[in-house]
Length: 322
Length: 136
Image 1 (cartoon, each protein chain N blue to C red):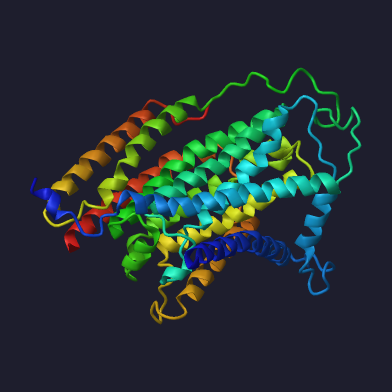
Image 2 (image 1 turned 30 degrees about the vertical axis):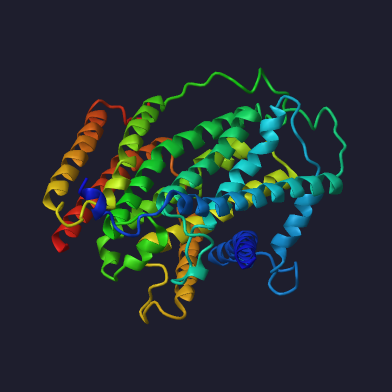
């Protein structure tokens, strides 16, 4: 009975985090972008600095008419937002926050493998939306999404493999437990490659070619309205949380801080995730969008060679010290 | 066989291994329920007033020309081949990564790693030289 309660509690907490934290990131994006651009951002909803803006948006989305174009492939069109959103929920369960048994939704033995595989599924949602809309802009957006996935999945995989080599395990808590402070400079190249590739996979600026609003309206999401559109947006912000969480766990030492890993370790994890999420927003404000060919060139001629070099470095250092 | 006895004690039994995935499966069920409830509730909340204009495919406000599933030139199919080859190779890194520095391996596996990386690098250089990585 206790086990059942324990599992139920964990699942409820993971689900609550999944519902709340992406909204916090979204609201932070509203405000941070506004202040970086010399304006205020939402100020009205909820009273205090527009804190309830996204709640208001959610209410608005839920009341909007749900339109499926007559030409569209109806079933696939309606399912696509769920396919885009749910993988991030599943990844969240495997990300450890603190050193104790209670600070992770569920320890998955093949952690890195599991999270990378499931994260890749999310992109299928965009592909389904792009194809099923029967809209030229959506199709272009879907094709660009596919190209982006092909280019950036590989550097992500290689960078993660480097950390697995360093720790000698593919379990996420195991990796953080093996972490030492000098891993930071040792794995920094892999960390940068992982973060950049993750941004590209999430289609965040400067890698937002697939949804480039000035060229192809809104890419694969052009025909979506109301709740289904809201789920796509939620998927993007859940993706930011997942990416920052994984980068923290794999490359920044998770719950290790200057004062040691005991007690308030989970605060360090959350702090690092928050800083990374801020960087994601910052990049959106600072960098112009890459062109499709520039994006492919960056992946194949910069990120992949860098990731291979990082693997070589990791291998040499690891064998030398053991 | 002698080496069977050398397996570390923490070797995970298959039943334990799949138990962790049953929790993941439960979460997937919760997720599907959430989406179903959201769509169901949305159906109750939202208006339904379809008109032919609303259901028309969006094409910048003019009547759509031809059909949406148009023929497009997929310029990156060579990238797709490259990706599949490289990704299948990289998958083998993970099981190897957990044991390569174990006692008794050391230098040998390091040489193997450089042979592996060499193959990947030569493949990438070849594709580069061939002009495959140009987007034209």
